[in-house]
Image 1 (cartoon, rainbow, N blue to C red):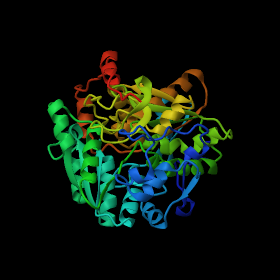
Image 2 (image 1 turned 180 degrees about the horizontal axis):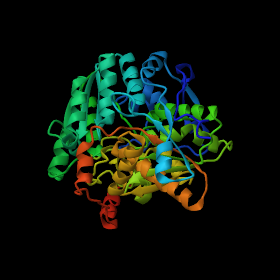
Image 3 (image 1 turned 90 degrees about the vertical axis):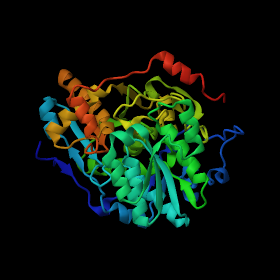
Image 4 (image 1 turned 90 degrees about the horizontal axis):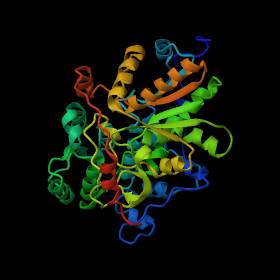
Length: 455
């Protein structure tokens, strides 16, 4: 049997998707609309165009079209690193002595080292097509900022990145990759924006958060002519672009008649998890097949497992629209753990609604156990995974060990959506025994919940 399925299943470039899949079209109950924080009314296309590119606004509001064409220019860029391989983790299976069959979709085979490039090139393309000078954004671990700087360099756009302060300090080499591609990188919160100065006055010792960095990037975009803000996760348009991950995975699995029992992804804002599960979730929503979906988040920032489903600001400075999502509160300041890309206070509106309908599960894991899983994976599969992706690896290993106990031959698919070669400070902390686990108390979370907007 081992020889029947190759270690890596590659698709031909002609098998690449030519359309993005919009899972909202198959959702009977749609995600709640974005609200204007001033009026409390749903955001209009005209209002959103002040912040986002015109075409991206249309994609953000589109809940009816199941498929949206990928422009040829974007598909040609994708061909530089797509289709990405689907890998059978034979060595990990042997290491765990499990009857489970483990597959992972590897999105780290480009210079940015992650899946983020799938949406970065799309958003940069639409900005260029609109005739803009440049874009602004935030980044946590730096993977999104790296990807966007690459895309902007390719299209000759200016790129301004606000990087979460703790990641700016922990991941200097990823910062330098962004600068190599021509981006300016500012640690957030900073003294370069009004909202940054306000946050620093209230929280002078803060390590920053994605919510802080979003506020600064939005202010920078709206205060400069010819700029728009772009976001690497959370928004529905981003999950749309990332659907290429799941679509390629499904094409590869279908070639060998493989049907996963469970699909696992790390969850911060929801871009890679949403992209991986989208076409499979579509089948579940249409009643064509059933799968078990598992979102894995850090115990230090547990928006799904301990958050509340409510309207909240998408940013700490409260300048963005309100979104109904599982949230810890826009003022929540997560501990400076090493999974920088998962330190967002809320979850994608799409994934929040699917979770609320009990169509997917969520698990929170502590970072020492995450890095234990990362090293098991690295030593068996030969790839050093990013801390974010290692959350999915942790639960994939746990589920495979359950199969060992029960003797069940379940098929597991997870997303390996980033490499860890710029995260060596984190690996050093783990190997030196200096890594600690932090879990917020109920009291800390309640203080944050108390500040939620009254909608």
